[in-house]
Amino acid sequence: SKGNHRHFMLKEIYEQPVVVAQTLRAYLRRLDGEVALPTENFDLAAVKRVTIVACGTSYYAGLVAKYWFEQFARVPVDIDFASEFRYREPVLEPGGLALFISQSGETADTLAALRHARLGGQTIAVVVNVPTSTMAREADLLLSTHAGPEIGVASTKAFTCQLAVLAAFAANLARAKGRLTRDEERRIVRHLSEAPAALAAALAYDEAIEAMAPLVAVARDVLYLGRGVDYPLALEGALKLKEISYIHAEAYAAGEMKHGPIALIDDSVPVIVIAPSGPLFDKTVSNMQEVQARGGRVILISDYDGIQAAGDDCLATITMPKVHPLIAPLVYAVPVQLLAYHVAVAKGTDVDQPRNLAKSVTVE
Ligand code: M6R
Image (tube, rainbow, N blue to C red; front, side):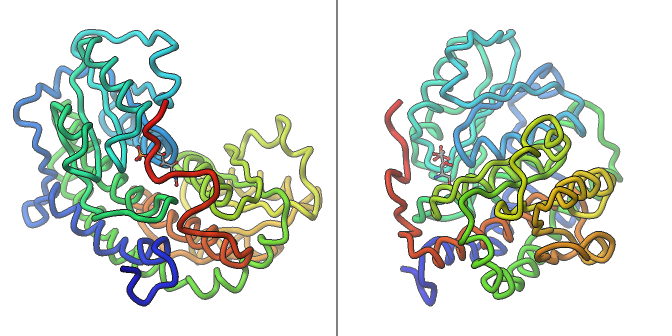
């Protein structure tokens, strides 16, 4: 049931601190400071390339994971939409690891891609939320998210749980590759363990986001900008907004704006900038200022320091807790979800059952 919440989507957004904790418990030995994935029977040290395949929100979780796998484990990652994967004749070398990400475990394109990779001799790892699903059954390495049933068509808690598993997996792969000292592993475990409390702190901004929803609800087009792992989050934000509020939204890597899309900017296009303080902050802010110089109105999502440094000329700001960059993608998912949710409510759309969409896409 929806409990006290008006929609399943909101209930599921609010479940995130608990379900992410549940998911992390399965993959971290917190007291020992170790990541613990069921990989004993796999020679991860021999993995030379990872191929990630998924659709929709699960694909965006995969995009974040690409940054992590390459950064921690120094293993090159290819990533495809499942609907593109088979048809581009991907080069699958023996000994490769193919990773499929899916809430339902039944998405037709992802399942077909999995079978294609199997024929290509890949080891099949699967991050799924439904443990009885077809993908779970066909996996060599099953990494379940423990988000519980997700009812809202817009995926929320499954996404943050996918990120939790993928971060632990990246650390696990890095360790197998000899790329992680004991201390670094301990630190990763500690940062990941801080995610549930940080998610709860992010939820505290719900009312403030609700109050600014009308600013976005009147728009015909919305842009989302981010750099690094915040770019996939921008993509996720745009997808959430499109699918439940029916407002046209696009995401760009912040540095790409000046290569074309900045021509769209005027005061009728709200620009949502996702920029936690950190090494990429100044770069993103200078892209944000290019937007503002052309009359663009910005909603900046950052932490206290970031808002202090760059929030002055913004239309609105959303203050997140200051968190370690590793867990920032989980934490910043929350305001992005809440903004889409409240805009949809303001527009009076059917949040849990948006038009033209099904929870699980079982046709190609
Ligand atoms: O069940 P899956 O994770 O395989 O589903 C993939 C997409 O269909 C799904 O994420 C879709 O994009 C959501 N409606 C996004 O909110």
